[in-house]
Structure formats: structure tokens, C-alpha cells
Image (tube, rainbow, N blue to C red; front, top):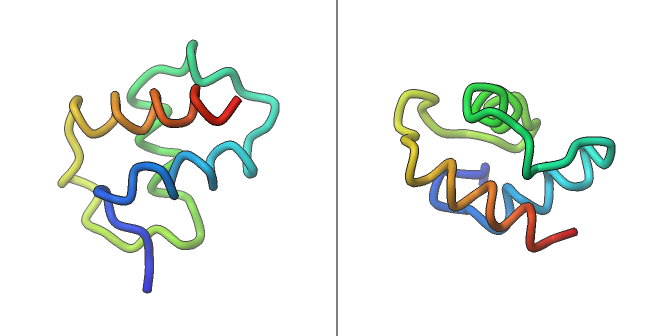
Amino acid sequence: MGLKWTDVIEIAIELSEAHPELDPRTIRFTDLHARVVALPDFDDVPSRSGEKILEAIQQAWIDEL
């Protein structure tokens, strides 16, 4: 079963593992969105995200540091 936009913590963990060189505090939401959609396990409609979801993913990613 693939990742959905609501799988915020799991997405943050995968982003942290896939992009250890990135600082999630400085990433733009457009770039964050693209990186989430590009995750191999991501399986949701790209347009279903919004600022609130992206903020939650970004915060969870920061918490992973």
C-alpha cells in the first residue's frame, strides 16, 4: 500500500532518508511537493495536497532531524 498525503510522518521519514543533504527549514513548498510526489512509495493524487498538508510534512521532517 502506497503513501497518501495523510501519511505525514511516514512521508517525512522517507524524505529525510532520501534527501539527507536538504534542510527542510529552507525548502519551498513547490519543491517539497515535487519531492513528495517523486517518492517511490507515494501513491496519491498530486493535486490533493495543500499548504496545510505541506506544512505538516515540513514540520514532521524538521522533527526527524
